[in-house]
Image 1 (cartoon, helix red, strand yellow):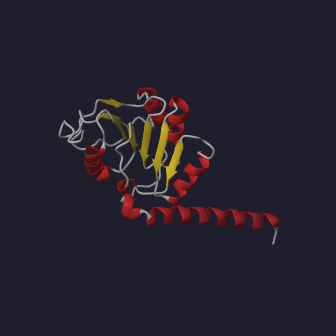
Image 2 (cartoon, helix red, strand yellow):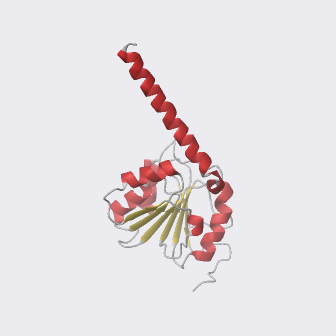
Image 3 (cartoon, helix red, strand yellow):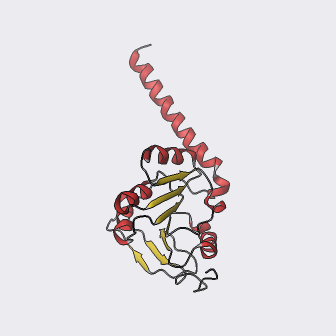
Length: 194
């Protein structure tokens, strides 16, 4: 068998294996994500978020579905925040760990954010499917401390009133980014927590 045929077969086999692993990673977390797939936030969206949502060094940014960690890396570099990401997709988790390797101040957890308290977050970032947004809003409303900000890409928090809606300057990635401040934006309009 010619060498080029062997190389082609190895490459094709490798691509099929990667596709299979990617599909398997989606299927294994389906009960948690309800079908949401790992889809990295476009650079223009991350830049728009970082340009418009200033943070202080030491603030805690929590990304509840951090994918490859690009939002966490950008915020850490830009503002010196403490960055915490949750990811349940094993491939995305591994990518995030590799891309943040050696970066101080960033923690990536291979765990379900639904099972973690978000009460220490200064900023919560999410890019999730619309069918989980009501549940996210409920969780945030019961856990966030006053003054915490929430950033949601593409899909609003049901019943919450955004402080501002950003539109990245991009024809391909110009979908809205909703900015909220707790408790002013939430449905109850006030915090039951003190």
